[in-house]
Image 1 (tube, helix red, strand yellow):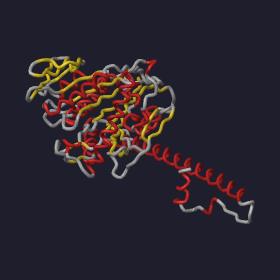
Image 2: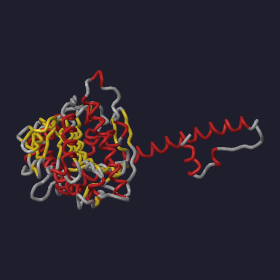
Image 3: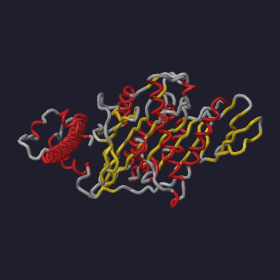
Length: 423
């Protein structure tokens, strides 16, 4: 894990003093006890996103070629610069666009490997998961399987073949994200976002392949209601944001404890920690960037951010190379089909060929998602009907086998079946 602090400055009698790896709170130039912290890196307000990326994230992206999972996220109070750090601007691109370009550059350098890259973009808004790439795709459920681990069901994934295509999808997602105005921020993020890239690769002329997941996370900032002036919808959003960040802090606290004293880790208490479970304490290389506002009025929030970063620095992950040894791997399933397309379209313009291949890949992936959705719906219907039959059988026994015959088919209205979902 890598924890870093970005901030610096002072107003009034108290100020934060920083150097390359440490930060301390001073009161009239005298250090305040218990407020000195040491991290891998500490940056002031003049640092560029490119420098932060080079020191903290580039190694995670490059490790994708070797099949390692990786996650980078920004944590801190509202208006402290998290979204700017992750997304950046035209003059100073953030972590996410820099990582996207780096992934494709790295893939291009690996001439002995074949890559398949797909992306998804989700937000967690008021503890509900929404697909930022598909309007109306909201309240998506979380599932877990031995093959896929923890995943969001129904989330749209796009197969991509260049950085520009990914950046266009990011623009689409940002347009669909929830923002709002508070006293502290004209354009305040009202949701957590997770931009995920799945990178499958295999050595040419070999049967086995590997995949790596890259999570790039922009967390909404913690809020103090008296400062933000939130009410109504903004107040509700702030409560959900603070609760999920509190649970994230609880998870980090547990993970930083000694193994024998650790006990239960509450990943399931929040959808954010559930989705990022492997990144927080499992099979991933993780970099945490903590941002803070340097003004004296935000001293307590900054202290809380630094304490979170200190605990996060004590967490140890065990990243391993992910290998796919089965023919079910998406990359290998498509090889024969792509080669067949190439033969059929031999002599056509290469750009048209690539577009046809990309469309075929997307169609296949969408078909798989639809198949999974239908399978889950059929399983749910089967379970509900079994429950109904069981209750009808008990009802008949309690009525001493009277002449009233009730069949499952009489409950044709889906609303009657929904009642059975709650025992």
